Structure formats: C-alpha cells, structure tokens
Image (tube, rainbow, N blue to C red; front, side):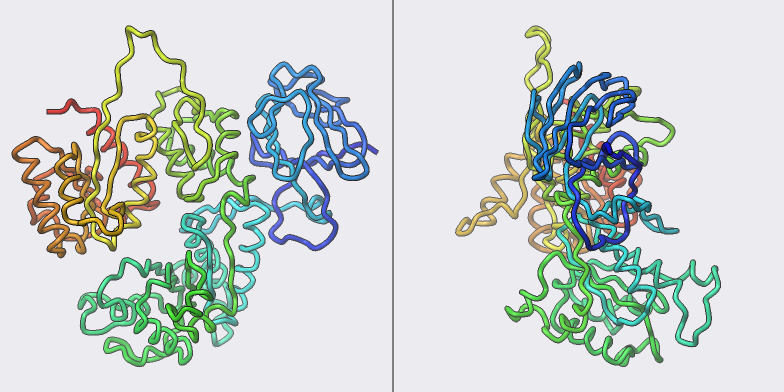
Length: 554
C-alpha cells in the first residue's frame, strides 16, 4: 500500500485520536492536499506512476524521494529535480524532516506536520464567509476555535464570551462569526426570526481604548453621551455588542457592564427603558485572568465573561493560512487584474515570525503591491524585509553609473496617546519604505525613561523632513499635542518648507483648524475609521505618503 494523496479541506473541529505525520501542500491553489508519511520509500514527481504527484511544469519527472521509517523519521533526498529541493528556505541534497518544516519543490510548497487520523479523511472548508462581514481564512487551528464559537452563538446560553488573542490575529472577525451564528437562533419567545430580520440585527464593535473620557456613558448612555444617538449598548439591541480590548475599559464602566450582564437591564439609562438583550462578546490582547489577579481588572467581570474563553492562535502557529491570506489580500487590492504571486515569495512569507499577525501580513502585502508595476508578478524583489524574520536577498544592483543613493527622509508622527493603535497600524504599512532606506520614522513613545520628553520631541520635530499628524478629536483637544507639537510643525511648514501631512484617523472638525488648509490623507478626507476594510484606507494613506517622500525637498 503506497502513500495516499488526496484533497483535504480544513475541518472545523480537531478530532481526538492518533496523530499521523503528513505533508500539507499549501501552495499553489486553495484546495489543500495532504500526503500521509507512512513507512516506505516514496517517489515525488510530476507524473504518475510517482507515489506523490505534483502536477507542475516546475516539478521534474523524478524530483525527489521521501524515506519514512517505522520510528517516524522522515528524510527527503533530491534525485533529478531541476529546480531543487528547499527546506526552510535552504537548498538541500538531503535533509531529515520534522514537524513545522517548510518544503519547496519547484513552485510547490508543503508544510510538514501532524494531523489526527480522522481529520485526514474529512472534507470541510478553509474559508469562513458571512454575509455583510469579513471573509476569514481559517485552517485547522483557527477552525476549531470558530466551530466552538458558532456552537455557543447558536445556543444562546451565555451572556458573555471572551475572545483572547494577540493584536492582529482577527478577534473582530471571530466575534462577527459568533454574531452571524447567533442571529440565526430562536428568540426568547421561540419564534424563528425572518431572513430580513436576521440581516438587520446589529453588530456594534467598540475598541475600548479609544473611548477616552466618559467611556461608561458612551457605552451605556448618560449626560456626556452624544445627544443625537443612542448608547452603544442600546444600538446593539437584539444583536451583538463587541467590546474589544476590554481591559482598557475604566473600572467604573466595568462595574456597570457586570451589573448589566447580571440583570440584563440598562437600569441607569435615561434614554431607553426596558430589557435589552445584545449578546456581549469581549476581546482582549492581554490575559484578563492575570490582570484580575493584579487588581487591574474586575475579577467578578472576568469570571462572568471568562466562562467561555476562545483563544485565537497567532499566525506563526497556523502557517498553512498564510498562502490563502496573501492571495485573497492581493485579489482584494487588485480589482480587475489577476496578479500572480511567486512561490518564492510565499515561501519567504511562511518563514517569518509576524509579531503583528494577520494585520501585519496584510499590510505588508498591500505595501508590496505599491512597489509593483502593472503586469508584474508579485515577488521577493518587491519586499525589503518583513515579519521580524530574515531579510530577503538584495536585488541585483544597477551599474554604478545608474546608482543613486536613496534619500533618507526623517518622518515624525504626531498623535494623541489614544490614537497609538492607528499609528502602529500605519507604521506597519510604511515599514517597506523604511527597509528600502527611503525613510526613518520616530514617535514620542520612543522617549526613554528619565529623558526630558518635551525637549526630545522638540528636537525630533526640528530635525524632521515630514511630520504625519494623526487627526482626531483627542488630538485637536490636547493642549500639549495640538497646541504645542502641531503648531510647532505648522510654523516650520510655513517658514522652512517642512511637509506636514494630516492623516484623518477619526471623525472630527479638523477642517475648521489650521490643518484644514493642508491636503489630507486619505485624499477625500474620509476618516480611516469609516473605511471598510480599514486596511484599504491605510494602504491609500501609505501610497500618498510614498508620493510625498518622492517629491524633491525644498
């Protein structure tokens, strides 16, 4: 009995049972193929009668051999592969394979790992798509989390759910998957909602770190909440309220949320009486149990929302998801054009650490597309270091007569502390420019302990060539940030030709300020918070900043 190679699509549940060592062929194509590594010697080639057939013109007829012994040891040997055998990015003649190793044979990329026996024979899907919501690429690891989330959403048994995961792993998308499942459950009277009613059930997402003063009243209503709109909790009536980064919610608001979850009444609201029943989902990039033990988060609230905790795995633990994330990002950012993605680029991206997870990967891919000429395949030449891993080989330098030393522009961010997340996300989109030597960036978070903060900020503003101002109500209302830092930058803009670029992060009355006389990014002035997806807006801003960087200095 030889090796079996069959289509595998990621199951929604990781079954119990014996683990089998396999190679998952994760690129090209979306339909994952798995090769079980049973004892024996198995030929890999382009055509049958090879035991493992990889139908690609970049794979040779007799490309390589797999040697699998009864103790689970696996070796790969190159035979007549014209395009070579690569293990973890290194060309090899032979190598012993372990779980987590990445293979490239020609343009075919495989991931060595272990899967439960029952999962290998199952069929499912590697993509979760919900109407009016994000498409979430979910392989084996994340599908198990989503399956549990959907079961809970459909049950309607819990008042609170906690979604934990590192920044950029996709907590909001997981929350929306729960919302979509819960919108199909029976209501409290046992009647099935109509399709139209299901489609209109609200999903209200809030980043608790951006609420600022009066967070409790913005969420639940009160005298400081906007007079022309209901509280976030009331707006989520009948649907879902997602409180992301809930650990940044002030303690007073945590108390009120706990009271609300226990009573299911917005008893202190002046705007709306009666019972409100949104499903409350909390998200956090920090371990709430640890914060509760340290007295930095209400223990009773953690016990209430932490009864069901869904841990979203980081991207480095679900490498098989990287190729479909890349291809879908490319397709979404290139409407009307079919962009080919080179397998060597996919190999490189799969070997990176990605501390910013899916968000960082998508930002890097969009930034690479800005470097690409129309009709060009997307490849490693468009990338200058990514994901916190090894930098790619330098492109072949032009003849000395054609070389031009890159202009290194000093770019300084000015933003309110509440907008640090916006600055971090934009910085990820600008990172390729930094790796290219076009720019070096600085922001006030880099001021070390013991330094004179004002003097250090003033020094960097004086040395800056470009100042990017992240505009929001928090910035405009700050005497220190707007009254001092922005005004200093505007003075240099008028007298010394410093380029000041206002980036509209959140809705505010920025046009009535001195910044209103400058050209904003995005160019139509639409705040980044209103873009869907937001990364499209960040890509547009990155393209605009790139144009600024390439302008001759005055």
